[in-house]
Image 1 (cartoon, one colour):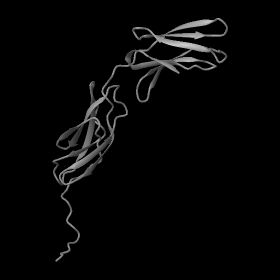
Image 2: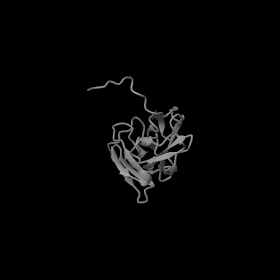
Image 3: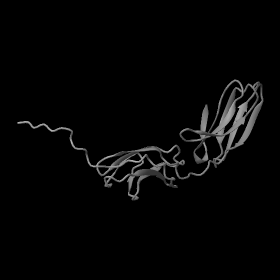
Image 4: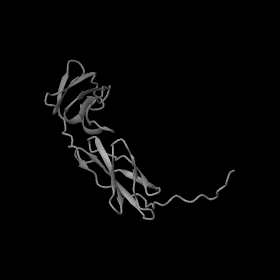
Length: 189
């Protein structure tokens, strides 16, 4: 497949096959999203060579194909405008482990970053609203100080240059407490 870059993070390319070569436009991402497919022929088409060029403004693709004999086809294809970036989806799989006056919260990255790199996360405790911000590469946070004996849940939001996600589903409830006393003590002379 030959590919050529177009506007808005779109890659355009063609499949060079014996039958039914097509032109594809994909929005770059993880995973790439198919935005448009243009069919150049039926299953009996035997296009042997082709070329793809993008217009200087990046909004059109010119696909030149050579058919059988001296036939040359020029196809002009409009490249769709990708949707604008948005705030990310919320993080998910939020869990918490209670400690002494603290809790360790873990979460999974959002399914979509909104087509813009994440800039960070915010973890918020409830009750109390105490929050901690983390870097975008971090998916765990120690929340402290918390009150021993109080039950807490935690939500996480993700942020990029276009906004902040809705809060995640709350974590299961945890109750911080004082460390337990040892079960037995042995004196050594």
